[in-house]
Image (cartoon, rainbow over all chains, first blue to last red; front, side, top):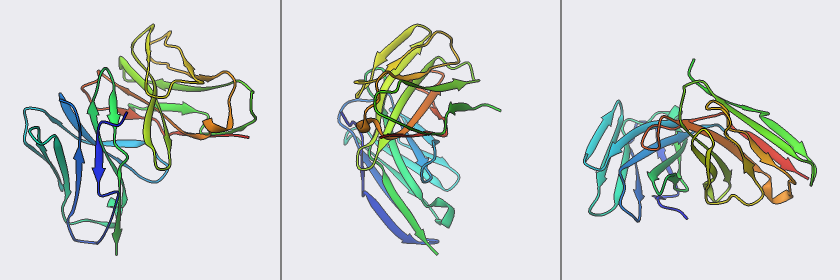
Length: 109
Length: 112
């Protein structure tokens, strides 16, 4: 069963613009993670935010978490062509990490 | 270099021919898991292991087996593969469930 669901499913923007992706989940969590996947490759961890945190930054990435709304957002600022990838949120379910279906981000030159 | 390795990376096989996909990590991680990724369905967990000799089913365990005899290895076994197991498989490991998961490069399996 899916815990996290990303929105939108696909996003296409111009290089230099900001990209925002959202994740909603259903049950309470200890933490929420975001991963990136380049086509056909393994997932790469981007950032982990704990349930008692509201915002976290890492380079051009900004993640927010609203536990009252059971939602999180990932903002990529000043996008680059290399940011083209699929982005997944993952939440800790019962003894396992549950991934959403991802947002496919395309950065156009 | 800290990494998760999977072998083989690509495999084409026929229905019913038993196969094993190996997974190994060199980070002394306790938690390991297997996922399959299919278009439109995202990543779905097959099996996971909290530690040596401790394994449990994920969301889609049917048709798969695993074992965890050593901390570093977590092989995925398909006793009698079928075409609906054609997929991209990922192994992952982490210190614990609450920590960053490190993913292997993936194994693309085709069952004819």
